[in-house]
Amino acid sequence: MELREFFGDIWGKLSKEEQTLFLESARLVSYERGTVLKNSTDQCEALYAVTRGILRVYMISEEGREVTLYQLKEGDFCLFSASCILSRIPFPLLVEAQTDVTLYRIPAQVYQSVLQTNIAVSNFTSGIMSNRLADILWLVDQILFKRMDSRLAAFLCSQSELYHTDTLTLTHEQIAAHLGTAREVVSRMLKYLQSEQMIVLSRKEIRLTDKESLSLLAGDA
Image (cartoon, rainbow, N blue to C red; front, side, top):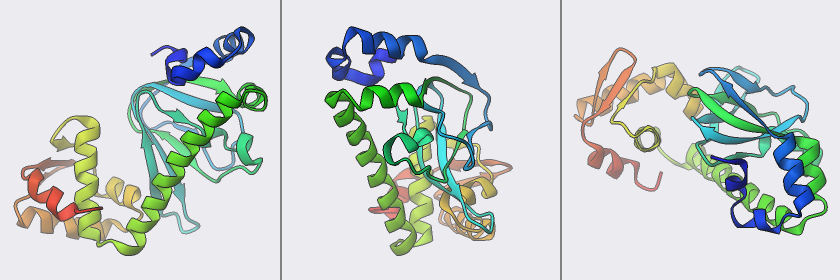
C-alpha cells in the first residue's frame, strides 16, 4: 500500500504542502516477528501505518501478566504508538510485531503539526481513536462479564479469520498473554474444547475442527 491509501478520501483534503510533508517524512521499514517496536517507556516518536503483517498492542501488569488490547493488520493505523500527540500523556502500551511486518513510520511531530491545522485530519484521527477505544471497552466487558471458555472460543475464531487458516501456531502461554489470564487456565479450557471435539491439539498447534460449535460457544464474545 502507498501512504496516501491509508488516508482514504481525506488525502485530497490535504494541501500540497501537507501531502509533501507526509510523503517526505514517512519511512518504510520492516521488522521481524517478535520485535517490540514500542515499549511502555519509549518517548512519543512515531505513528505506524501497516502495509504488511500484524501488530499486537498490549499492556503488562506489575505482576508481569500480559493482555492484548487489539491487533492491527494491513491498512490499519497505530495511533497509540504516538498517543502523546493526542493527550500529551503517554499511554503505557507496548507494540509488538506478531508476524514479520512492513510499515510506514510517520514522525509524531509531523503528524501533530498537520493535526493541529487541518480539520479533516483531526476528524480522521478522532474516528480511529473512537474505534480503538471501542475495542478496549469491548475487552473490558469480556474480562469482567464473559466466561473464559466463551472468550477462548471467540479468540480462536478471530485468529482463524485473521490468519486465514484453521491451523493456528500458538502456544498456551501466548494465548494466555492475549487473554490476560494464566497459562494453566488456557490449558484446561483447551483440553475441554478438545474433549468436545471442537479442536485438535498438537505441539504448538491448534486445529479448529468444528468452527460452527466454536462460534456458538463464543456467542457475543
